Amino acid sequence: MNSKININKTFKDLNLKELEIRIFKNRKDLFSLKIKKSLNQKFKPHEFKSLKYEYHSLLLSEYKYYLNKLLSN
Image 1 (tube, rainbow, N blue to C red):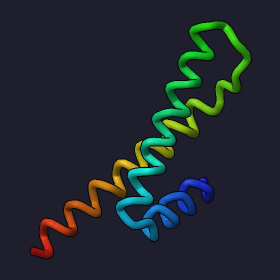
Image 2 (image 1 turned 90 degrees about the horizontal axis):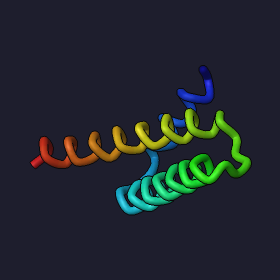
Image 3 (image 1 turned 30 degrees about the horizontal axis):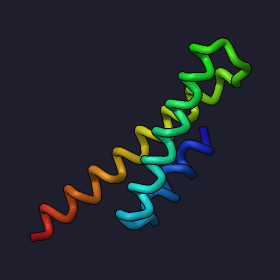
């Protein structure tokens, strides 16, 4: 549970460009895991959960960034 809190704290420190890069990389990793699963290759099932969690946390951070930017104007 503590690791989830630390992940969110580190995402707050990222700027928009870094967030977008990490979101893209995360989506790519999720896609490659889905491909491995469909081709019956070896993969670690727990990575789905952690990657999905990280992906949604990144999206939330990006959303908060845009929301703050919109409200500050």
